[in-house]
Length: 328
Image (cartoon, rainbow, N blue to C red; front, side, top):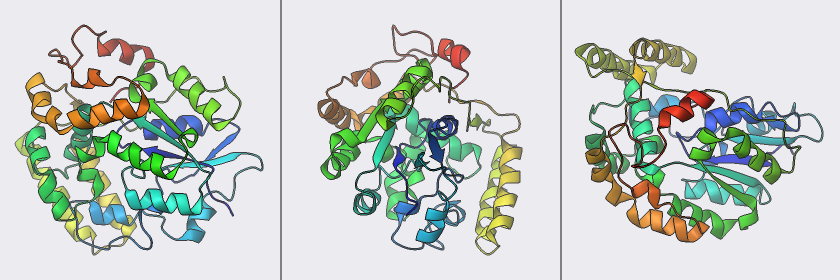
């Protein structure tokens, strides 16, 4: 059977695309040509309709058939470790149970990120794609439960995706701890060579061959203008129409509009302390749970930030960007 030996299982907007690209350069590793096959997210075909804007087209991307999934790994050279990256696995209880049932010895890699920053990057991604109809981040988070109740896909679960303590506690109940590697996103930013060294050691492949993480999947932040609103309305209309079109035609149409929206976009702008304070109560108990679970201190995620988005007293984030060119 051509099944993966390791999975980058979480979390969205924490460098998984870049990590997939970096690991694919290692001669001892084989990464699936489809970066995010989503095989374990369902027991069969995903929903054909419903959900939030863009969800139906995303469901078409699922590689849910067992033979098609195994075929992704058929060209791996003998002796290499096979892997894939679907960052929603950790969040989905059903996915974790399916992984445990089919590949119980799999090694799981998870990158966790400041949950408020992760949520903001998530919102920015959908806003820049013209799919998020709410132009205020905090207000969009206030819509989260209503959207979950309406069946919107997990990528719209801005704050729940960042409750890592709950997710990792569930994972540790299914897998021995030695099969899970948890890394901070900050390590990928500040010292990518060290992060890659830890991953290679965890997987048992030759160390020192990977030192850089490429700049991948960096989202622009379009201004909240009338032009953006008009194109976004067109984007969501195209998404509705796309449910009736062949998958490739619908995807091509939405990608063209998305590129148009992002053509003059800035990099994602820092959150204000007021914005962070509005959302931190959603994470405080989980941050404490995460710290107890991993034996680490994550209270820096709850600390005040300056106007540039940096923790008070910390080194400016721009220095990390200049050093590594990898920042969202």
